[in-house]
Structures are given as C-alpha cells and as structure tokens.
Image (cartoon, rainbow, N blue to C red; front, top):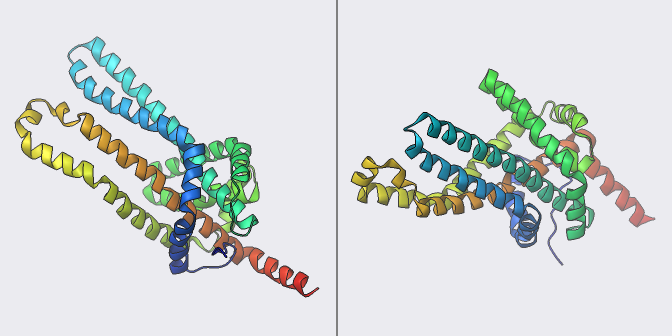
Length: 289
C-alpha cells in the first residue's frame, strides 16, 4: 500500500518542513514530469529570453560609441527584459497551477494524482492564475516601493493566493480579501514557516550554482589581463550555459515553495474551519452506518 500524506490537518512548523520533503520524495517523478509537460514550454521561453538578454548586454558594450548604437542597445535591452519578465510571469503561474492541482487531485483521490485532472485544472484556471500573478506582483511591488516592511507583510499574506484560487475556485478579486481573512492572527507563524523554507531553498539552489561560481573564479584567475582589457569576455558561452543550467534547477526547485504554500493553506484553513476534522468525523459515521 502506497504511503499517503494527509494535507487536511493542522501542522507545526517542523511537521510542515518534514512533510514537504516527504511529499517530494514520494511524488517527485510524476510531479516533475507534469511540470515539464505543462510548464516546460514557458520555462524554455524564459531561458531563451535570458540568453538573449545576456547576449544583448554583452554585445551592447561594443555599441556604446555612437548615439544610434546606444538607442539600438537600449531598445534591445528593453525588449529582451520585457520578454523575460512576461515569460517569468507565465511560468510561475503555470508552475503554481501544476503543483497545486497535482496536490488537489492527490487529496481528492487518496494519494493518487491523475494527469488528466491536473491538466484540465491548469487549463481551466490559467487566466485566473495569470491574473493572480500580476495582481500579487503589483500589490507586493507597490508595498515594497513605499517601504520594505509593507512589502514583506503583503507578501506573506498573499503567499496563499494561488492555493485559494486552486483549492477554493475563487475569482482573482475575491482571492485577495480571502487571503487577509484566512491569515488573520496567523501572520507570524506563516512568516516563520516561509522564512525557514526560503532559507532551505536558497541553500539547495546554491549547490546547483556551484559550477558557474567555480568557472567564474577560475577564469578570473587565469584570464585577469584579458578580462581587464575586455570585461565582456567573462560572459562567454560556457558561463552562460552554466548559468542557464543553474537557472533550470532554480526554477524547478521553486516547487518547494509552492508545496509549502499548500501545506500552509491547509493548516490555516483547518484552524479556521476544521474542514479536515469534519470530513474525518463524517467518514467515521458512514463507516459505522
């Protein structure tokens, strides 16, 4: 019998951390397979935009000798940056959609996530997920512009926005207000949970970026004179390739944060509404009947 994780129950910080990695250990193959299938194209576009962006920066240094070249360099920079940002929004929306719909199907089918349910769920919620990405980004961005603390506060509150969209089917406008309701009186523990998970995510991410750091260090030592004469020589195809590979792992490993948001959502929802407890009581009553 396959081991199943019960999402609909209250958890302390330690239990959430343990169950995040336990869930990944039990489901990584099918989960990441669906991520590649559904969100993979957006990831490839984002990586391509990044390479184009880096090439435009490197190539642009040699174009700064004239006003015409400067305007061309600026236009290329802006275009590549916009494509990168847009692809990033789509990718993170799809990533959240895939992971959360995977968990939704997993809960519904007692530990088995059905590919058709996940694909259909992401398809139906696509525009709501995109809208949530833009709205959350704008709200947190504005909060951060005025002062860092409001940005952090709003970021924690809206950390369960995607989960509310997927698990409760709410519209984007209703999602924001519901996030404030569900996280009321639970902000600090939510903040602590995400802080610890982000630290772990960052540590794991650094491991996959070690090759590019080693290459950067070696090339700096061996080609110091060449780099001094031409700083753009540092950003050769090897460096860009290693950086791109590191980015692939970085974006895929962000699934850890999304899974954390699901556990946090169910934990908060259970504290507020006792949904899982009521379902357990009902199931026991049916078995007795």
